[in-house]
Image 1 (cartoon, rainbow, N blue to C red):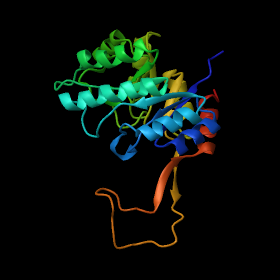
Image 2 (tube, rainbow, N blue to C red):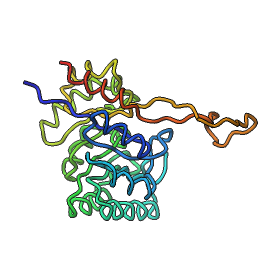
Image 3 (tube, rainbow, N blue to C red):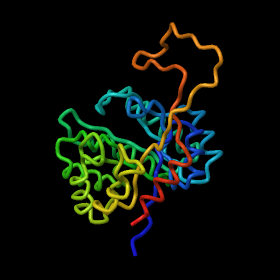
Image 4 (spheres, rainbow, N blue to C red):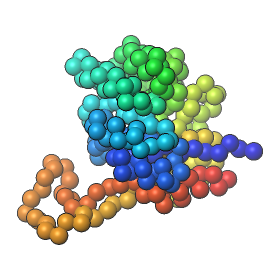
Length: 251
């Protein structure tokens, strides 16, 4: 009998994290700014998530959007955020640092991994993996670092586009590390993805767009530089979480 597939939800707020928990998710990756691929959430979000969640809470350690080549100052910020996650009682962190040549920055990653593991936190290596020049070498490097899992879309924009690579990565990993497909996973494709890749963990945001309850709306202003909709917000939907989890295990 196949083991049950567990669902990790990429939650952009405590509100989303609670919706994911209610839907049956096993773990939260807490972050902010999903439009930038996710950045580290505020200390307030982390504290409230830890207070209200009884499922596992992992926090994204990423000081900005863009690439995964960080300055010394940015690395110091990441170290400080890891220390805060330890103090807040988080279950794990989500990291990824690369060298300029597209290889894993093993030295800096090792510092973060060792700090986390010293205090009993788990470590996921995020989709910086997908930006590596050689995914299979990166796989071995990340195993050597002692990470628990790799979040990946198989080097493509979505997991379904990278499904063949994902299957090969899971085969190559051979149980030494979890390969967790993520990006573009939904109710309509998760069953096929799990069946083809043999993945035992999947990652999605399961979000919907919710309209603002504001009565007065100023249509003459845009507050952000990239997006024009100031009167809606994306949040994780409990029913979507339930449906994705059901389909993932409908094998």
